[in-house]
Image 1 (cartoon, one colour):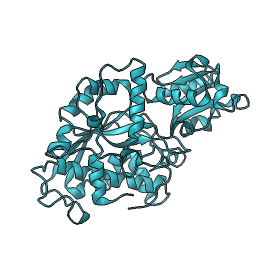
Image 2 (cartoon, helix red, strand yellow; image 1 turned 30 degrees about the horizontal axis):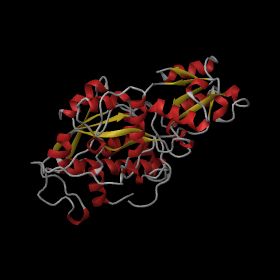
Image 3 (spheres, rainbow, N blue to C red; image 1 turned 135 degrees about the horizontal axis):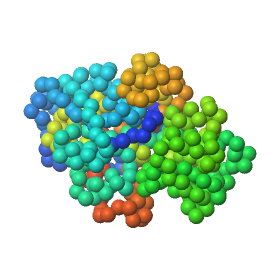
Image 4 (cartoon, one colour; image 1 turned 90 degrees about the vertical axis):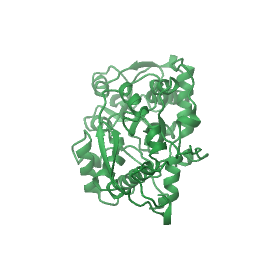
Length: 378
C-alpha cells in the first residue's frame, strides 16, 4: 500500500512502555539515514518455527512452518492501535503468529523482563527514567514509531483557559502565567521547553506547575488555578465541549518531530528469532496502515477499526473517536531518531541521567527497513 500519507492522528491516555530492535543471527548493522525520513505530517536468526523459504522471496513473507507466540507488554493505550488492529484483523495469524498481551505495574518491572526475553515487544515513552535504565545496562532496543503528534492536529498539546483568550493570543503572552505539565524530565517537559524557546521565554518567566494527573488539570483550569496546561486527548475534546478551555496553537508549531513513544523489542526476539520478528513487524505495519486509512485518509473500514479500538482501549464511546485528534502512527514505522537524541541530551543537561546511552545500539531501525524492503512503503 504505497502513497502519500497525510497527517496522522490519535491516542488518548498516556502511552506506557518502551522499544528496541535487533539484527539477524550475525548482528545486522542498523541502516543509516532512515528513521527521520518520516514526514512531519504522517507519515534474523531463523527460528526453529520459521519457514525454510527466504524471507524476501518474491517480495512476500511466507507463514512460519509452526505456530509461535509473541508476547506484548501493552496496557490498553491508544498508541497500541497497530497491535490491536493486526490481531483482530488476522494479520499476525496470516504468518502463524499468536499474540498475547500482558500488563506490568510500571516500566521498572517491564524493562528488565523485556531485556531478559521474558516478553518480546513493548511500548514506552521518552523519559530520563527510560534512558537511565538503558545507561545502567538494561538492554532494550527502540525499533519503530508508537506515537507522535500529527502536524496541526496534535493529540498532546496545550490548552488555554477559555476566559483568557482575549488576553493571551500568542505563546509569548504566557509570561507570568501558571502552566501545568504532567512530568519533569520526560517528553512533556521537553515539549514545554520547546514552547518556551519558541516564545522567547525562559522557565523563570512562567510558573511551571507539576500536575501528574490530566484530570486534575481540567479541574484546575475550571477553578482558575492555572492559565494553561499541556493536555492530552480525549480530555482536550471534553474540556472544549464543557467550555473549560480552548486549544492553544499546536505543539507542531514548535516541536513538529517530537517522538513521544516507541515500539521496543528484546534482543533475543530481534536476534535469535529474527524470522518471527520480521513477520511480526510486517503484521504490525499492516495494522498501522489500516489505522491511517481510517483516521488520516478517511477511508477503509472505519466502523470496524473504531470497534477494535473501543474493545482494546479505555475510550469506549465510538462517537468520541470521530471527534478527537488521534495519535500519529507512521505507516512505515520510522521514528524521529534525531529528536529522541535531543530529548536525551536535554535530560542529561538537567542532570537527570547517569551514564551514557549508545544510540547506535539502542535505536535500531533495521527490522523496519528489512520489512519495508519486502512489503513496500505506504
